[in-house]
Structure formats: C-alpha cells, structure tokens
Image 1 (tube, rainbow, N blue to C red):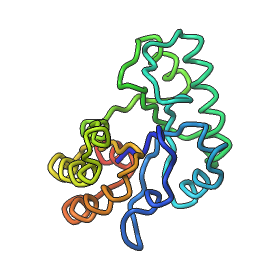
Image 2 (image 1 turned 90 degrees about the vertical axis):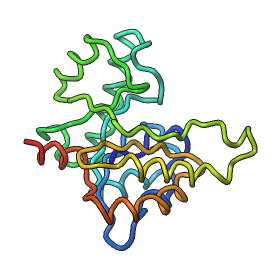
Image 3 (image 1 turned 30 degrees about the vertical axis):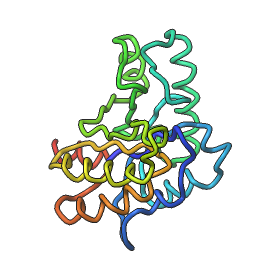
Length: 193
C-alpha cells in the first residue's frame, strides 16, 4: 500500500490507521511535509514505514524539463536520506512519478540514483468533486467501498491524503487486512522475488 502523496496536509489520523499493530506503508514523500508538519515523517520512519520519492510537489513530472525534474528529485532524495537511516545504501528505493507519467530520460536518471519507479494498480477515486456537488458525506464511503472491491493479492493501493482519508481508512482497512497482508512496496517486491 502506498500512502499518501500528501497533496493535502498529512493527517495524524492516517499515520496509524488500523488497530494496535498496523501495517507498514510506503508513503511517497513530498518535502514540504517536513517544513509544515514536523514530526510526521520522523514518526512514520520510527513506526517502520519506508519513504518513497515523489519529487517535491504533486505534479505531472513528465511535463517538467529534465533539469527541473532532476533538481526536485534530488531535493526529495536528500530529505529522505536525512530522515531514514541507511536509505542512501538501501538496495531498493522507490520513485512514484507524479501523475503516473514519466519520460525515458527521467527513468534513466532515477535508475542511476538507485531508484525503481513504482506505479499503482489500485488508484483511488479520491479526486471526485464530491464537496462541490454537495456530497461530502459520501466521499469516505465511496472511496472505502472502491478500495475494498479493488484490493487483491499483489495490488499496490494508492491512498491520497484528503479530507476524508481518516474515515476512508477506518472503513476500508479492517476489511482489507482481514483478507490480505498489507505491507510496504519493498515487502511486496521481495515476496515476488
């Protein structure tokens, strides 16, 4: 499970979503979290979550110039290296390209920095304009039902941190963890090896 990409503020309620022994996740890091919400990233690392590079803002990285992309990517890499002991020498490091799109040059560059690109195959429906439609109360329910329906062995679930994320996770995760083991992208990859 990859969570969250942090377009909104990281919610403390999403950091420990399930019971006394929650699964470890792979949050895709956005560096402004460290500035705006000190402690959230350190807490995630101390709880066993692995950080993944998502550049510096949630944007379509394929639309950036190569120089701009590399600058933003390196900035995020430097922050993760400071936050997560042993990250620089880790065998498996993950990059989730913003917007799910990339260029071959971007992948060559991230690979040269020791990263593997990872995409999701269960992309949530968190972008529905429910508040504008007067349907805010349904956001958590709709997203949770969708996640429960789409979860399957080997799936990479993406959960954006939005206004309804804590309620979504409280609704979806108990059903998902009752059927499947949830872990980091590295754990999934190692299981497939």
